[in-house]
Length: 430
Image 1 (cartoon, one colour):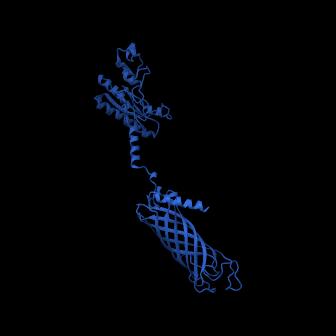
Image 2: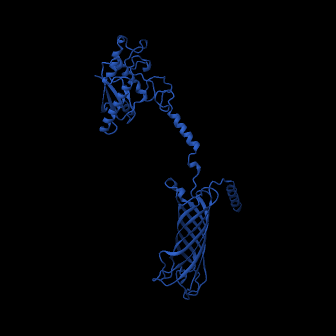
Image 3: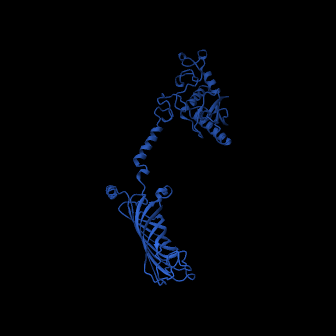
């Protein structure tokens, strides 16, 4: 057993020597405050609820940011409750070795405060009491004890913290009552000068305020140290930012970022949907940017236009406009046209500039998400945005009007793709 214990101590010592000192481990703890002997007391003897007269001195060493040890001593005196108890004075001292647990780290106090901490401590030791002018005229009373308590911390600086501690001490093999006028035994001997050699326990507590003074060359003490792996380094943050920038790249320039783009090599000028896929609006197998009649099906031999009506392509544009095939789309709760759908606005612009006698109403719509009155205003802002777009392209204001029609209830409001089709402006030739 001794061999294993020595091996463990040697391993721990080597580990401590080789460990990198990233935080301070030593502190001096000084506090003063109240004590209260709970019992036993001789019948008729009372102590005040808070008796001023206790001092704590301690030296603490933290193995890491969570666990440590401290050696401390407590000194003071017990006295009577004035006016209601016979007079007594008992001086005491105690010496303890305790384990320390940083409850502030365990409970993640740092998630809401960088100045509050909490330590739990527990251990054992020995103590001594001496009594003034008792009927037993005894000498000093020596006993062992067990102590446990909690210490609240408030960081004033990296070198000093304000402390508040409450501790409970249980004395073992205590010979006399705390006032010293009876033996601490179930029954008293007939001759009060004869020690019955029956020892029981005694319980008392202390409450103190004080300071923890941190020692060492590092910036922080273990009480406040947080391992670096709980934070992202500058390099890690830079890497994450670069990853986000890479996601937002639009390599093919179709208006859809790469991380959403299901067709990453769309040709320049191609019309795409919200997933970046090239559109074939009339389903004739010819994508829109290669189809001269993108909204009317036709063979590839005739450039995607119906053979029987190729002579008047203006009719195709008129039909696609009136039948709702030409739309400008918007993102959720936005009045800014989606880049991929601006080609529809170019179609209408070219058509109107070639036909200056034709007038078009721009009709704005919204999906069914949100209040109805808000969606009416949103649909009008969308119509106005496309109106401004066409005006800036050279279309005469005399050919245009716009109106918001509110929610488009013709689509499935539970489908994201359907709601995207509702967030649009359409055109109507008047």
